[in-house]
Length: 64
Image (cartoon, rainbow, N blue to C red; front, top):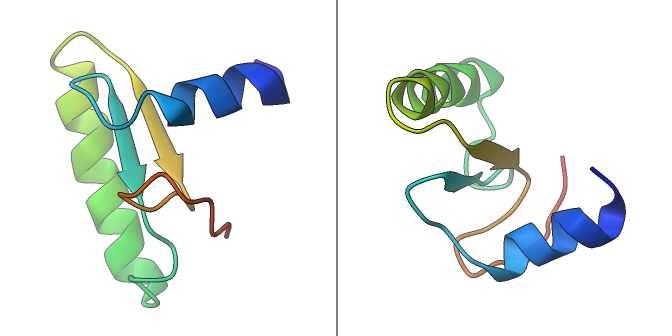
């Protein structure tokens, strides 16, 4: 996936197959890992998808 495709994915917003996780709102790394594992399991138990860490719910990119 190139950067243009990634930006298009973010522009779609969160869906059943796209989940955003904030790095800023979860400063505790261990909690963030647990949240990510839960999301990855949920995505893999459904239709698959993307977990984008460092993207806020409002689609702003805050990074890691």
